[in-house]
Image (cartoon, rainbow over all chains, first blue to last red; front, side, top):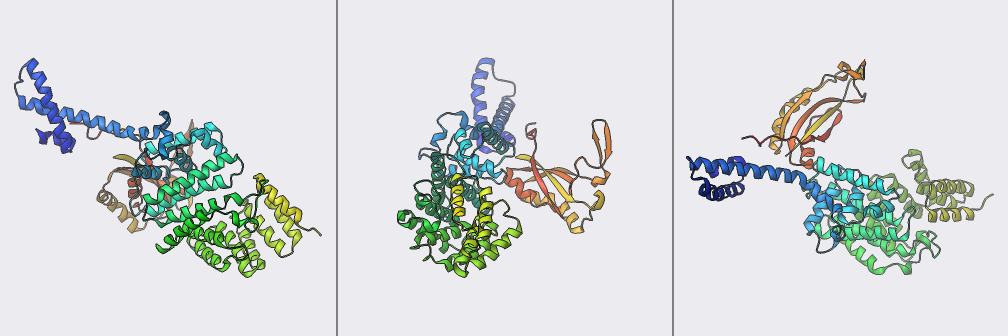
Length: 398
Length: 118
C-alpha cells in the first residue's frame, strides 16, 4: 500500500503521511458505513487519492510561492523590518539579493528591487531618488516581480562556478546606489543620505555572508573612503570642491583606517578585482598628506591594472589624471584626445572638464574655455554647473 | 520543473538563404538531448525552420514574401526544455551549438498536466 502510494508521490514521507491519513478516514467511514468488500484496495485507493491531492496542492503552492515572496508590499509593516536583526536570517537575505540582482532583470529593475525588497524602501521614496514618477517606478517594480515569477528566477545563492560574475552584479548595484546618492543630479540631501546609507548597510551586510569573495571587502572599502570624505566634497555654500582643494583634516580617519585594513586584506587574497583596485586607489588618496604629495606613480600603476581588468573608457579618463601628475599635462592631454576621438565617452561631462583642466595647466586658455563650456552644456547638476562656471570665469581670455 | 522555450537565432546567408552548417554543429545538435539529461534537465521536443527566404507573411489580408520581422540573425529553430529554474535553464541553453548568433530563453505559460494522471 505504501509502495503503491510512493509511486504517486515519489517521496516516502509524503506517501507515509497519505497512508496514515487513509487509516484515519477508514476509522470514521468504516464505523459509519461498514467495512468495504476489499478493505486493502479501499485503503490503497484512498491513500493514493490523498497523496495526489496533496501533490496538486503543493504544486500550486510552489507556483504561487515566488509571488508570495515578492508580495511584501501587500503586508504593511513587513518592509521596514527587512534590515532588522529580527528579519530574514542572513542566508535568506543573501538569496533575496541574488534574486533581485539577477542578470535576467534590467539594471534599473535590479536597483529598484534591491531597494524595495532588501532594504524595504518605499516605492515613492525610490521613485523620488531616481527622479521618475511614482507610477513609473511602481510599474517597473511590478514588471520585475512578474518576470521573477514567470521565468522562475531562482531564490538561491548561485553555484560556485557562477558566483564571481553574480557577485559582481550585486556589487555593481550597491555601488550604483551609493553613486546615485553621492552625486545625485538633483534631489534633497535627505534622499541622498538615505541612498548612501542603504548602500553602506548592504556592503557591510554582504561581507560576512560571502567571506570567500574579496571583492565584497573591496566594495565596502571603496564606499568607506567616499564616506570618509563626504563632508569636504562641497564648501559651506554647496560648491563642489576638487580633491586638491578639500580640507584633509576634516576627513574621517577612522573610516579611512577601516578601509585600509579591508584593502590590504583583499589585496592579499589573490589577484585584485575592480572594486579592490578602485578602493586601493581611493585609499592611497585618502592617506596622502596633500594632493601634490600623493603617491602618483603607485596610483598610475593601480590604474594600469584596473584598466587591464576593466577596460572602460571612464577608467582610462581617470588614469589620464594620474598620468598628468607623473608625466605632465601634455602626455595626459594626448590620452584624453585619444578617448575623445574614440567616441565612447560622447556626452560624458567629465571628459571635457578633464580636458579643460589639462589645457589650463598647459596655458592654452582659449581651448580650455571652450572645453569648460562643453562640459557646462552637458551637466544638469547645480553644484557642478557652479563649479564649472567658476573655473570658466577664472580662465584668462585673450 | 518549469518549461522553457529555447529560441535559436542564427545568421543566415545572403538573401535569407540557409547558412552552411558545419558537420560538428549538426552532430552537437544530435547529442544535445542526451547532454541536457546529464545535467538534470529534459528536452521535450523541438522544431527546425527552413531559412527565412522560404517564409510567407500575412498581415490582415496582405500576403507578402519573407519573414514577419527581418533581422540579420533569423529565428532558425525552437526547442522546449524542462529545467528547475531560470539558472538551470540558462545552464542548459548555453550548451546549444551556435555558429554565429545566439539563443533566447523564454518561460512557457504554465500548462503542466504531467504527473497528475493516474
